[in-house]
Image (cartoon, rainbow, N blue to C red; front, side, top):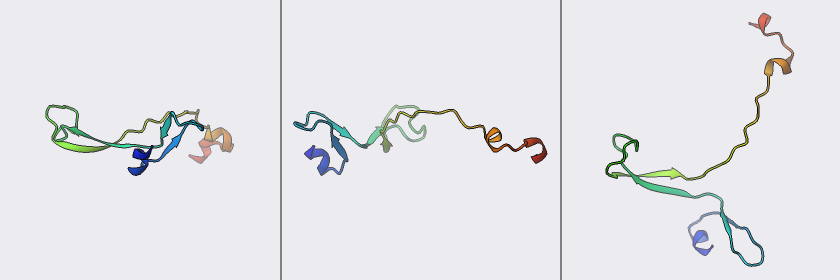
Length: 79
């Protein structure tokens, strides 16, 4: 935890009494990849350090709203 704090990485300790787990809030990484000219599509020789956002977020997608039904407006005369 001291190492993460010294690097400015936000974290939360998961256990209260004796810290056994730490949850990192966000981490940025850099990767050496073959960036020119394929932008990493073909990795032969690493020629560039590229900043990457390594966060993985799980999203809960919900069904969209029917704007026509909610508004009560008839779209034919409006068009």
